[in-house]
Image 1 (cartoon, rainbow, N blue to C red):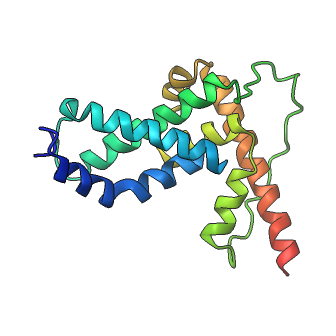
Image 2 (cartoon, rainbow, N blue to C red):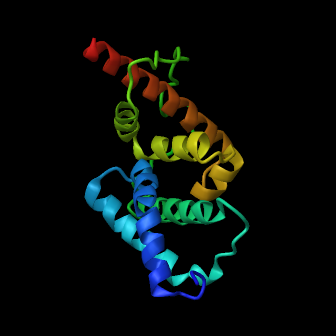
Image 3 (spheres, rainbow, N blue to C red):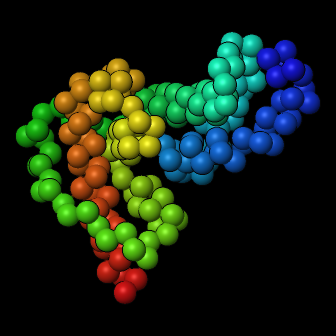
Amino acid sequence: MFARGDSRAMDVLYAEFADYMAGVCKRYVPQPDDMRDVLQEALIKVFSSVGSFNYRGEGSLKAWLTRVVVNEALMFLRERKKMLFVDSEREIPDTPEEEPPDMSGLTVEMVDEALRQLPDGYRAVFNLYAIEGKSHKEIAELLGIKPDTSASQYHRAKAMLARILRKRKEVTR
C-alpha cells in the first residue's frame, strides 16, 4: 500500500513519523524556520520517492526516513555554507581533553539545548558519529572533508559540549 503511493498510507506514515523526523531534523538544523523548510523538503522527497523504498524488516522504514532527513539537512547546510570545517590544526587551537561532565540532574532538553549551541559543522559531525553511528570515513564522504578533519571536529565538538554542560550544571546549582 505504502509503496504504491496510497494516500491513506501516506497519511498514516505522516502521523506515525512526522514528529520523529522533526526531531532528527532539529539535531542538524535547530533554527525553527530553517528546520521546517528542511523537514518539508524531506517529506516531499519521501512521498515522491516512496516507490524506491525497499522494506528489509522492522526498522528499515525508520532508517530510510532518517537517511532522507539527514541528507536533506546536510544539503541545506552545504548550500547555505553554514558548516565550517578546518583542515589545518593551526587554524583553530586544539582543545584540551575535557573530563566528561557529570550528567546527573541533566534533562534531555538540557542536552538538546547544548547540542544546538555547537557550530553547525561540529554539530553535524557529532550527530553523524555519536548518534547516527557513522564512521569518520563515511562522514568524510558525506561532507566532502577528510576523515582526520571529521575526527578532529568530533573531538572539538565533544569538548565544547562538555564545557557547555558543565557551565549549565554550575548555573543550575
